[in-house]
Structure formats: C-alpha cells, structure tokens
Length: 238
Image (cartoon, rainbow, N blue to C red; front, side, top):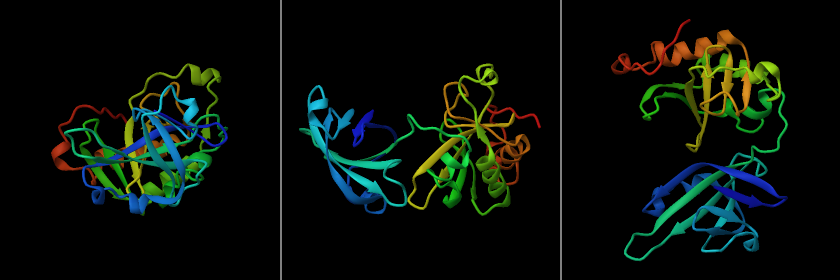
C-alpha cells in the first residue's frame, strides 16, 4: 500500500487501526492537524493527486501525527461503507523510509522513531503471544537503546553485509504513549534490523553484548512469563 504525498515522497504503510464504532478508534489521540484530502483506489493505493490513480473509488483525509515529524510519519483516516455491511473506521499510519541516508542508529531510532520516549517494550512470538513486557525505565532497556544509537548502519554493498547469514532474530516492539508500535529484530550476533530477515533491510551493527543482554532479559530472564518456557521457537546460545 502506498501513499504519494507532497514532494513525490513515497510513504510505505506500517500500521493499521480499525473499528466498527468510531469512538473505539484512538484517532483523537493519534491525529494532529489536518493536512488535506487524499484519493484512494479500492483502499489499496492513495494519492493527493487523483490523476495519478488508475481510478478513484474512495476518499480520506491526511493528518499529522502528534509527536512525529510529518516528513516521516503521517496518518490517513478513512471510512468503508458498503451495502448490507456496517460502516468501519480506519486509521493507517504511513512512514517515509525510502531514499534516506543513515549512518548512526540514532538517526533512525531516536531522531525519527523517538524510542527513548517509548512507554513499554514487548517481546512477542509470531502468534502475537506476549512473552515479556517491561518499562523503558529498566536499566537493561536504557543501555540497549544507548548502544543502538551508537551503532552504525551497514551499506548494502558492503562485502560483509552481502555475506550475512539468516540468523535467528528476536522481535521487540516499542510502544509509545499513543499505542503506536515500532518493531525491530534483535540478533545475538550484534545486529538489529527493521525486518525479520537481515538481508534487504536496515541493518544496524552494534555492541554484541548489549544484544545478548536484551535477549536474555526479554526472553529468558525474570520478566519472561513462566507459561512460555516450553516454547521451542527460539534458540539462544550465550
């Protein structure tokens, strides 16, 4: 799903919020000032320029998101109303992550995502089973974020980047005060990525021990729920 907006910037969708009752949608918390109207093609492709769509079948409104730069994160609000069906209400959060140059981890995770301002951090299974939830005030979390900010992104053309194996990653999700999530994958070998695979993703090389520490804390430490001890999806070797 893509949204073409302003200076030919392409925003790739990241988060969806839907409800059958408008008051169940946290739009009053997430949405800031209105930017303008947007046109849609079957709720799949969106543009502020109707002529750029193959056909225009729906409309919505673009908004700034409270607490985030509009050149990075914006939100689309729209409704879906069809015969014999209840009207549903939707907020789609878009992020501008294409055609950007990054060097240090802080340029993405702090300057754009503001992870230090997150309220909670969760370790989750693929089935969305929450293994552990901790406050970002935990010292282990603070040390991990500090190490991430100091880490360096690898160039995709780097010889070592091209030779990366598909290591086993551990997902972490950082939730801000509005409930918006920023998800990453952490690898005990000392990497962090924005996707579940290392190749073709933003790959940050950081302190290896800090990666091991956060994995141990979130997946094998005291914060982990006892009932999940038997899950065999993750394998960790310290």
